[in-house]
Length: 521
Image (tube, rainbow, N blue to C red):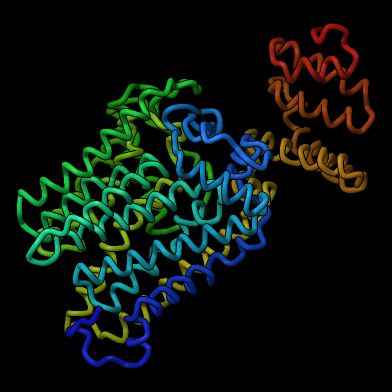
């Protein structure tokens, strides 16, 4: 990892230039920003995955050959056997569903990803300080916090891990006067593992082909790499498609078909992803993104303009800098998998930025390296500005980690805004507080239960008293009243909910519990 352009080598630089030193740097950066995750009790949908897997000591291997059930959208689009195996064998059996240990594993894997990115930047010829900046940017940027802090999103962490490993092994296979088949076999294995972790890891295929072309300038070698990884992808997809999709029907963002959905992705990219990359605050699980209804909307034209300008900048920079070329391609490939070419369950999510962030960090690091080469900009000033910038991002990332303490704090941060409580926010918080009340009742802590019941009632009161009260708000308010012994009040609310949704099994259950004879008014 030596670089003559970096001049003399002080002790710190010599230490960080060693693999162990650079890894410790990445691990320290991760812990400084996200160490709070070790005390977070909430594992998000990771807890749901483990709950669905059950608790037996051993699970039949056939479970890995079933499409995993992650939320409402299930089936073939979510077949991730490697991630499922890790959840079963590590999180459930080894860690005994201990959220702290699951979060610790996420932090470790995230640090490894940053380290592999740093090594990749150096192999591409990036300056020492610029490579450190690229790795640190990837490690501490708040946009990665959702994946890092959520044990259930380890799919993305593993996908990046094996994708970076695939690129490294491809470079090693192509380096030197003779092609090394052993490294190509390793690249094929890591590509398969990445694909088995999450389908988005397919981005490693075009990137590996690009790397082979950059290193060898040989069409034959590039073709061999493409055929090897392409065969892996074809085989995996063939097995994948043997499963029957059994999940909820998916629709394209905006409801206007694939083309409008892809156009809406550009709007989401401009308004959410790109904006949050530049100014990463406030962070939300569910961004209030409103899709456009037609291509004539001015937001579509604005998004297209931003997309074209960014593409032109990437093309210009790619003509003379390999890190910019690979980084730009990585961003494009990373977002392509969620660009509504195929409908996805969650059309807008911060976790979609985790894979593309590798490419964005490469581009940002190389741009910093170019500025360091300029005699017009003082080198020391650039270093100070970079450190201040990273410290600010790290502070925002650390602040975001506080939101993930448990389900209540997370959803309060997601829904509650100063002075504003939308109906959606009130409904979400009412449900969360009601869940907490039920848990407190089960634990025999009646004082805490009363407190959570009061909070639930406070959030639902405005909805329940409105003329167009939603059935779910009425149902939850009825459950709260029933828990407090107010049976007449619960019966009244159950009757109103039944009038709105008579076929809702949860509403019928409440009606029966309150004494409505048939569960219907």
